[in-house]
Length: 215
Image 1 (tube, helix red, strand yellow):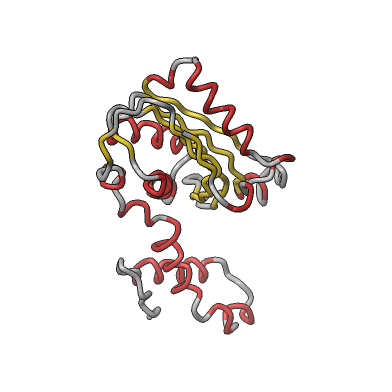
Image 2: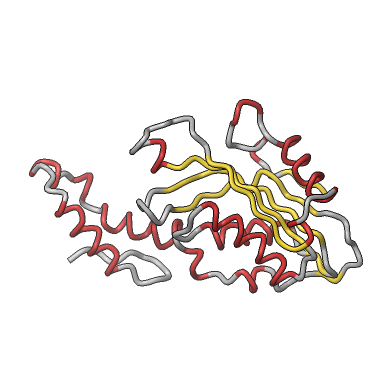
């Protein structure tokens, strides 16, 4: 029997499954008996439940529910939001930065809520293309934004450590909803803000380790 993870979600079944998975790899006997693997099923289950797929326990509409009434109609953008996710094809993680913008439709939310929205949707089994679209659509549907956009840049381990093994490859996806779905000045301002905030040479981490804000 594998020890039960101390998680908000009962991870016993996940830990048991990890233990069976390790057995199925037919590792050398010395490796299987190693003390390094003694707590691995517990640690893996906890990592998945608390860090990798915890987004399923958070509803985007709840993240965006606490907004302030505002007459502002100017573009709001937040760049350099670090995120991680898991590819549903190989169950390998990706990591990168998200850039998010919206045109208010009567309500504004705190910048921290935008970060939590990204986490809620990224901490799932999701393709990067779908994640960008879901973030943009959530701002329109649950915040009432007139338009929204999301641009994602990420490194995928399923591309960098297996298969083609291209260590410098980065995937770039963008999605727009509402008024930002049309080419125009707001979208150009959003893309210009991303360009100003981006590190030279394709570095994934934003400057000074912080998201940059532009209204």
